[in-house]
Length: 440
Image (cartoon, rainbow, N blue to C red; front, top):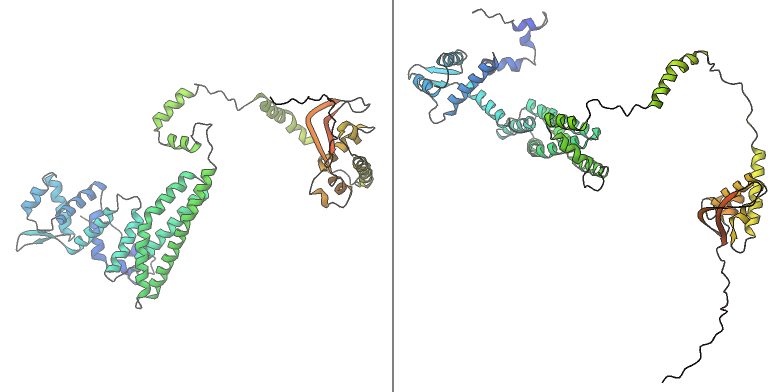
């Protein structure tokens, strides 16, 4: 069968020799081992699963690693014989399954064993939620245990840590309690892997023969781990803030988060059934009112056309009105009111203290009563400070009383009383004395 696959040189520019590229040389040097993975994973998904199944079963028999053809047929009796023979043939052609003609037995080649070891390590983390970081950390730790720490594996681990940090910061910025809790749980789970990477980095620092680039990568990993560690306190503070912002539903003890969690755990069919029971067939758009519709219609039909003829020119410049005279009048009225309040030496009703000849002056006096005892007004260098320092107490009950006045018909009921005022003692008019009686 003719192989129509393109040549390696076809993927590069015509003036470039692929064998001279430094980034491609490690791959070309591992061609036999990479050919093992190509043989296993080329083709349809179903074919790949069956090849891996057969290869793993052959490699799992550690006590007797060699197989006779009859043992293979018996062990894989659950497979179609024709399909099994196709799989074994492919494994033989690509050097994964070696035939020992002297003994008439099959055994796995060294590249096949290496591929199975890598595959088993990866499958060991398949059921874990954070298998990427765990797998990368295990690879780095395994290399360190045999004295061959891979720079490429260290860079992959650094990239995974930086990715996690960005994921966690995005969760914090989202202000979503669910995302923050999920990110915090993930941070707690991956911390075991971070501790393993810390041990590897420590061993790299203490080895004087470690290349400089590997030391720099280990330092970057340590820095990334420190950033992740700092996020643990941030997560707790942010969750505490969200806890304070929860909305409680009456006195039921439930919060909006409880309702949201309950709804998230319902299936789509359950949610659809609840909506079918709670919503009418044709929802009434109560959010659309007649007033808003009228405003929109008036703008579209009238105001939009009217704006074309409206002039938006600024008015001619004009001098601002002089407010100095008005300020002098107000200051004079406040001074006269201060003199009036300063003469109060006994409880006085508000009507007696405030009423003036016109309504404006009376209302102005009433507004000045709010300055009594105001500490902020005492620092003013005008009559305002004198009003604030008056030893008067204002008492009002919120009611109003009718007054006989040409400009004011009603006024607040209350009175002003000097703070040092002492009510006179009313003598007791009952002079009847109780006669003395002798105790029997």
